[in-house]
Length: 300
Image (cartoon, rainbow, N blue to C red):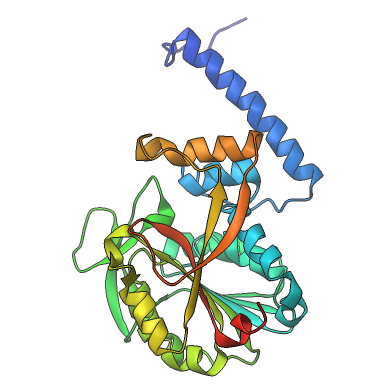
């Protein structure tokens, strides 16, 4: 036997870390088999991204939130099947794919060029998602998007160029598409740009009066409300709600650990989910606020 080449690879992990890694691999393999047995869609993700972790654990990012939301609205799902959903800040298409099971058509907007490639790939798993490679705002313009390598979905619009950034196109929803179907749902997750999106969607919201899901950070609240909530009130929305899961996670636990603890707790011990209507909000992060249109509130 003639050795053509030899290279020594020094140990990169301690024995105990190697053992932990092997246990984690076995655990993930079991989860993969569970997802396959349940016919979960195998969507493409960015390795090492925070969304990828939750997809590996549950098969879908924010699965319990989405399931609770649609279970709550099960009495109008027949109407949804004739209408449309708009996913603003679609990222890789996790929510768009989930919506595609409930709506006749899903319109997905994602300005990040690389993320849009995965969105388009995942959208091809179904036949009712249409993708658009631009962002939405209150005017037609361009902006700099700064990327977070640990959380691609956390890319933010700024006015400054940075090492990990790109210039993206922005348009107004009101001037981008004429919707053939009734729009029943708009989901907005644009990392602090929600107010501008709402301003540029005034006509669409006024004519369709959709249910609106949006994110609000603690820094956006003042005296129990926020600029987004106030503009939605001007658009005719008088009722709002949020999702609550019990038991929660102690606030004394460091923030960077809470999400992972929540994931593990819900996976192995379960949680109770509630949709809570509220007219005033305490100052904290709300990843899943719901603006309830009058037509829906009258049926609740």
